[in-house]
Image (tube, rainbow over all chains, first blue to last red; front, side):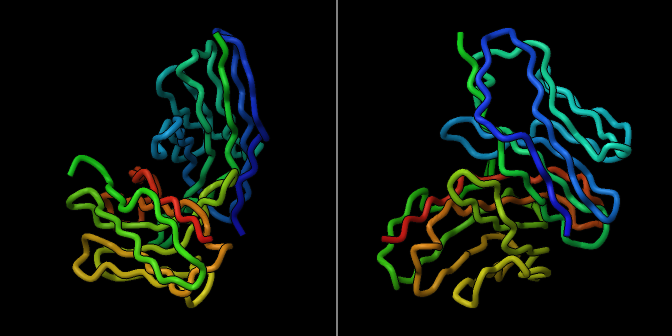
Length: 114
Length: 117
């Protein structure tokens, strides 16, 4: 079945460092890809998405490019801030059928130190 | 309302007790999902509603789990005879569309943390 594998955490960075969180997927069709973020004490929030190959999703300085050839959707940010400390989840949703359920990675915890 | 609302936020149940978890989706949202998130894990799909119809319940772990959305709005996830392995955060999400598009954002509630003792 479909699956998502993302880089294990925790990841600890200093403020203004470069961030990469790797995400690869396995899917039988042509999924949409998402990054969700969970800040401490809050619910999951959509960070960015991409719906087809070579699309780039971006938001709040974060970017991820849908790479069909490598089945990847790595999350990057050029300069992290303390406020980016959170758990990041990579997820996919199949385009076929009526069920838009999300298949999730395990999550990667990010801590940014001042 | 402004977002997806779940209640209670926290629930402690004795093993064997029945529990009911409520989800109020965003008004007008057609699709509603329940997920289970164990500690340190990603969410796992439980069930999906399109309006009042339960189109997919393949993720429900046992027949002790039951979900309903009788009027196509509020949904309740019921767990009968709770077991310790049911301890998790139960997440509800809603999205606007009911079409075959896979790119519609799902909005999540803050979840209900269930602890079975």
